[in-house]
Image (cartoon, rainbow over all chains, first blue to last red; front, top):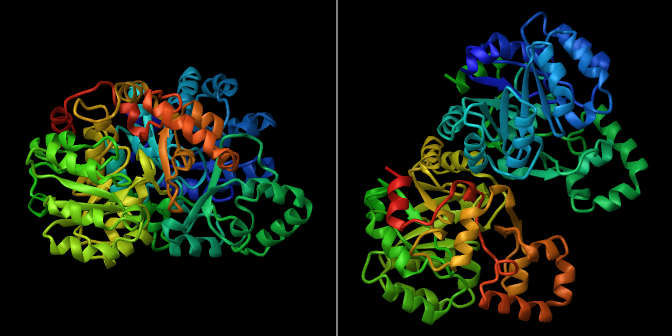
Length: 301
Length: 301
């Protein structure tokens, strides 16, 4: 069912990680039989155009942060003009965008972090639900995949459900299937792929990190000015920045001008002690940078 | 291997839930082929004696909160005098107790919430590691089972590993096996068993609750005076008490005398709006109170 629905041979979708999942990575996943999603992040029209170009005609989709898209809805028209095979919406109300996406011929994938959010996605008549556990890297909610996934499956017995969060090897895929998913959406494992846009330093941190070393936090959203939607946090590797500010968010806001300037300078020089490396708990299971096609081959049958 | 090691026919261990897993429930799980663990909680010698008596000679074990046991180590001697087949230690350093437990002939089960804690359990030469995900009810840590379990498996390839947290039906069991466990440790599903010591009101809350409705919090430990060890929280159903105090822990401490009196009065009258109902995210998957033996039969092969 998932194969026909999304036009894929392998039950794997690339998570649309902002600044990481560009056109080259998305195309590599699609060419390996899965579905690559370009990560639109907070929306930069030139970036989106460029990454669709870099996909080189491969059949890919795109993923948006819904609350951010609501502020610049023209980006959806831009994306649809590139004929994505699917559009994924996360973190916000998908209903205002659902009809336009469906009318374009693209499949609507909604990522959900709770049963309440799953119900909203069903109202939007999503083609695919992604049950995303809190173990996931980057933005996400509070519920863990182990209990959330079967609960979403029971809520939507006739909808295609994918599992996301904490999945980086074949064991995770098999567990997801046992819990009722038809396939997996994978992010963190692909940060450490040859084709990802992550910096070399960030890839090395993901390869070396212990899963105990991640934290769900809002400090990177605060410092970047991206804290536009309540109820989500970003899972990232702990670093000097989280040590300084996690739990001291009010103090960070008080000196935001100074800290923001310092933060972007750190990003510029790829300084992972300050710059965020969004990553999930599955970093434990990631030991080397691999070509995306090899990751797909190992992860799913 | 797990069968021979623990002397059981079914790969299921009852979580030693304080005030819930008494002798009757532990015995029912053991008689159904699993291993029942009496929950020693914060340690009341008379309670422990009574519940061993109520087990009626069934082959059961016992579980302690390690940091609490360290304050009244004589309770371990009391427990060992009842010849438990296994002793489980959670939340604290197991090493000071390991040798005495092994010398008694009981198996040592260590529950671990991170790779760091797993390493400590290996130093204690635990016979069994329980990888406990944050989705679990009651006390626990921050890491989710989906990524923690394979990481613990990889750390201890030759030790028996059980999975705990978010498991309430056969799907959860199968996923745990896929991720590398040899069996499961199950708590929340057994709150809603006929034999559990939970109040009728608490059992009904577990049956009716949505998994979105749980929260990891310290407020129930603070009000009861049980906040003796950093780094753990208790997952419970949200109620009026969590609404009032979760996130306002300092304020709760300021008026602790008044609140503590009111809290224990609420427990006395089984008022679940104030009294804690510890429960995991798997409450989504629990729809009825069942005999413990039927739960075992449905959950594992």
